[in-house]
Amino acid sequence: MHMAFDEQKMDQLLERYFQGETSLEEESWIRQQCQRPDLPDQYLPYRSWFTVIEEEANRSLDDSFETELLDRIHRQQRQARVRRLISKPWQVAAAVVLALGLATWMWTSDGASQWTSTSDQIDWSQYEPDSPEEAAQIYRKAMLRVSTGMNTGAAKAANKLEKLEEIGAFFK
Amino acid sequence: MKPTEFTHLINPIRDKLFRFAQRMLKDPAGAKDVVQDVCIKLWQQRNRLDEIDNLEAWSMRLVRNRCLDLLRSPSSRMGGLDEKPEESDPHPSPGDLTEQTDMMRHLRQLMQKLPQKQRLVMHLRDLEGLSYQEIADTLDMTMAQVKVNIFRARTRIRTELEKTNAYGLR
Amino acid sequence: MQLRPLSILLLLVFAIQMPLLAQDNKDNINAIDTYFKQYVDDDRFTVVYISGKLFQMLGKLDKETLNVEGDEEAQALMDIAADMQGLRILTAEVGADALYNEAKQKIDTKIYQQLMTVRSRDGDNFELLIRENSEGKIQELLMLGGGDEFVLMSFIGNLDLDKISRLADEFEH
Image 1 (cartoon, rainbow over the protein chains, first blue to last red):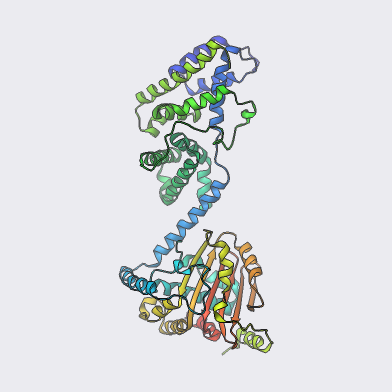
Image 2 (tube, each protein chain N blue to C red):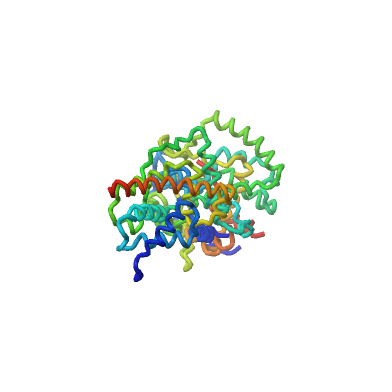
């Protein structure tokens, strides 16, 4: 910025810029020069242009992006674990047959037992596993966690056993 | 790979992906979704990420493909010529302390109205500082096409700038 | 057979005069419903529900499909399943400690009696609570866990705590 403004170089480079023939360094030079306070008036439009570019180049995502992305990733992970639950093909076949039967049954019968909540409450049926086999797996792990916890205390239970989060996730 | 390790990998490039998506779609909300979608896709490929030479370039292509899909879809409401530049800018740069002149607004709109190829080449060169070869790779063009498009785009801008000079500054 | 802490606790529970709520069963909303209502659309939570009917179907499954280690374990599980009316599980990996503390506050201690609390130094917390019906029988067991993972489980049915506690021994084989 100590050097006097080089009009000749500016004109040359601008010409080449608009021809698409400048290198990245040259373009950088033009941009810098345009920010000089002693920039001659006839170049002010170009300063406007490069300022627009600068502003556009600084657009960014806000911090919520990362949180939301992590949430989505966690959801993905849960989905993946559910898929791993049923690992044997014959189980899948059996599960499908049973699920169809069960689905019909559930739709036609009154699901509310005397223990469950009143009508304006949550619809829990959307969170059910697809088959009795899956339910059995989940139930077993839940019982394991509770009974071990009862007898050996929380810390040991948590260390010994896999996270309950892994046992299933069903989508709303 | 843990999710937080993954996001650290992504963070340096995500703004670039966002700007590119926004340039393609002309819609900032849609652009954010596109970047999310692309990041999820990358997450699903996380075990193979070290096979990719240039994560940034790869991601840009994913963004481009996703945007193209969206633009092609019949339900797409985008592609409109009227844009709202000021509202869609969540993080104005420090230089924005100077007053938004009509001129700058006009130039911004001008850029958005350029035909897609010209607009994107200009974006990648003038905003993101990519080499012509990198631009060609990202946009699936030949070098010749890149040069033609940058020339046309800049000429359009030049015409506008010189118009101003001829009639005095606004 | 060693004297389990649980047996002592059970004795204490029954020894102390607890004000039992003689409510009509229909009005009983389990703890999870009330707690979860605010989080229904919150994707941090993994939710599972196994209804009484599903438990019945489960009880009819071939033991092999349960993927269990031994006959005794399978039998013990089936036994308990026969009494189950519903199991609701809520877990979350994000913000486990905060959720644990909040849940703890929200559980009405007039309705739920603490059976057991374990707090460990590394933050793994574990609590068991029970709800009894007017006849003094346990109708709901709540498990609350914190630490790495937030867990809230509600077992509803005619529960026999002793059966459940013995299950742990079967698992260990």
